[in-house]
Image (cartoon, rainbow over all chains, first blue to last red; front, side):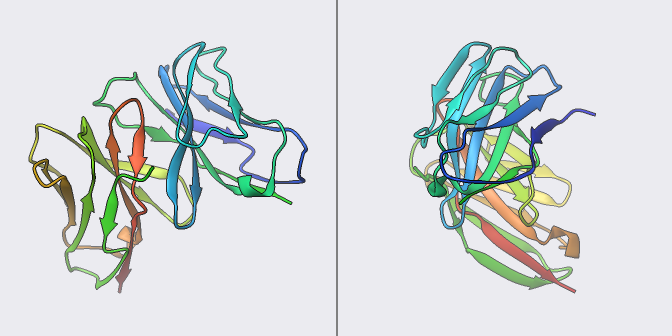
Length: 114
Length: 109
């Protein structure tokens, strides 16, 4: 089944403890992206990647890192999480960076930073 | 920055009625997309309309796009209880989707 998977789905952690949220897609998509969703603010893009080893900042990249060493995986790294990073995170992918493709979203990761 | 602004923020109708949601945006776009999100879950793509298209249909969904007014509408006909969800418009420009804050649709049996 074609899908985007994220792990973990739920995570409670403490301030400063490094964590990684994994994202994997099995559709051979070139483009992948991370969003966070917060009440009243909608979804905002954190980082995106147009292909392997090509990443770029979105609207809210502060406090996050990403890597794209292989096409299928696009992990989101929080080196020193803070409470303002408590949010619902979504990974998404699409076939290419072209403009006429829908994005496929993962199921989301609910992160709480205490 | 938020580009798409949905209107209304919340809509409650009876099953079988039609639901219309509107979206306005600020800058030029390549396409506009509508997504559905069931409470706290992932987003599901509904329909994509290109900037050179004016109307598109998919099942019970009808989307219009007016680039001169920078606005779009999503019409769901013959609504069902399963249509209860949040609906987001998203505009695609330079390598990213910019989402609005969504319309919360409730279908009452």
